[in-house]
Picture 1 (cartoon, rainbow, N blue to C red):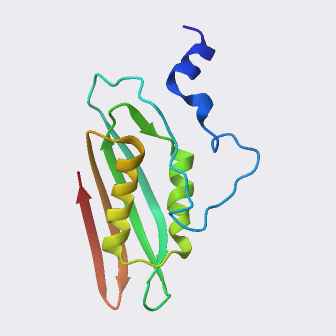
Picture 2: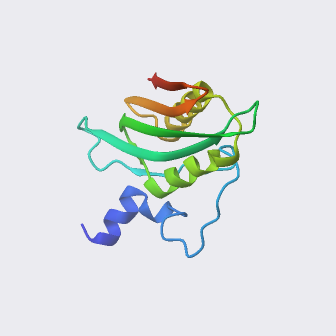
Length: 140
């Protein structure tokens, strides 16, 4: 199989964010596009982990920034999440007001909607505010 045939069969040609000359940053998670490509080893269970130590969102009550560390782990079925699309998706929370619990569960829901993984876990470890750190974990 030629490189061009591999790209076509894996859906790489359908990716619009990766390699784009200009990056447009989404202003909310609803505006962000979670792009995927075909899993080249769908017969095998293997974990894919994204580690995002510089996650930010906004407290929906105070408007103050919240800082956290998001880890996404999943076993792909037919599709994998493209990392630049995920980066832009996570960036879209920067000005989005939501509680930590809602953020983690929404990320899991959006991962599931985008690629229908066999298993998935999203963990958010948020920095202390008011003396209390919060860790939220949601799984499928």
